[in-house]
Length: 531
Image (cartoon, rainbow, N blue to C red; front, side, top):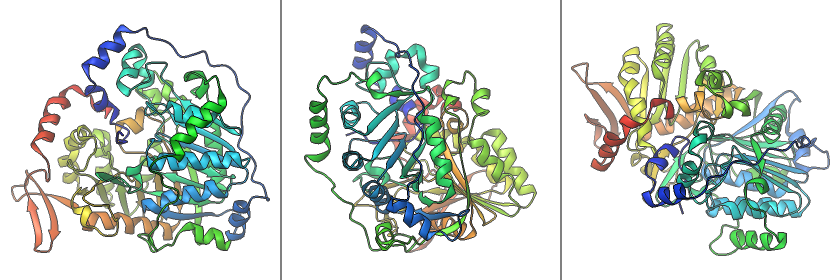
């Protein structure tokens, strides 16, 4: 089973492809995407009063104009929230992801989507086609059930056995295929949603034995769910979304496809439910307790969802792509800060423009704190080289920078990482002036700016801002290195605390010789725009 990786990592996957695969694909005939046929628009279903989720959302709300929020920093709780929504849905499930892995977590979700469809729930599943290699039987099999539609976003035409073979077979179409749909969204009955940074794979929900992502989602009810449903419809009905049957050969026997799907998701080592600790990091119990009770304990405020246009993947220039970019919304809001900004961005490459913007904030006496991955924590080490180019300049502006340690976070009991699993930051969040919160899929890097499509929301809720800051501080203060200049004012130092007191390091911490060699060999060949 391959480990799901971040939005920039497909660059490394291509560079590491085997010669045998490349040769075999080059010798085979390349194909082209089928002609996209006009389809009648498929809109989100209106929320029905017959749905228990609709009634609970309405009964819980203090006012129809307010949105309810519950942070989901704990992977177990975040996965359980999706499963609870799938199991309680009566009318519709609209599901959109950059990646759904065929591991225990992916199979659990897919099994619950099937079960919902068998109850009569309409299921629409939209998946980016980058990491579906090897998963065609799973997606094709789900689509064989009644009440289910599966679409692939910006698909590859052929040679579908691996990421490398797909790119080689479509080498002439690289500009289009370099753009991916990075959105993550789960909507049940038009009444409740989960969105944020997590893809669907074990490592996003603290279930991997080797490495896990420290991530963030948010559970939502209220008017922002209608905005998210409209965004989903925009992508679902776009010309970039192809029915899975148009890309993957349709099975001649639908019942056989269903049996194959059932075998994939029902047999062998399976998760039938999610084992939850009594409370999550913030002290909340399972969302199922609230749903059973009929009232949701949430924080309330106002929210606005935003996303790139699906056509961003067809942009012919970086300028055109930026004109449709969600990252612009994030940085525009950050630049409006009056007092302080706290940012969590796992893949952080500000560029020279970003450095100037943060410098402007500091000149206005706005305190800026950034949490990102250290080189050792980054699952795509090449991305760190892009960030490292601007690290010194950022520090000179007065920005506070913290880099997550993959091993120190192992000992942070609040995250409950299994065994000797490494921890990696994946949460994309910001808190502005202790009152406005951003949560979504947007990284502050070139790929989010001009290449991938993204989804996010801004929430005006001081209580939510306090909780997001608290979660960031748990990683920042207990599991990260703080950067500063050495006494000579030139060299960098990494500070951390342990049982013996303050630890000061003068080189990139926890970096292996192999990682240094990899970066030295590959970084000259990867433009910053691809990171």
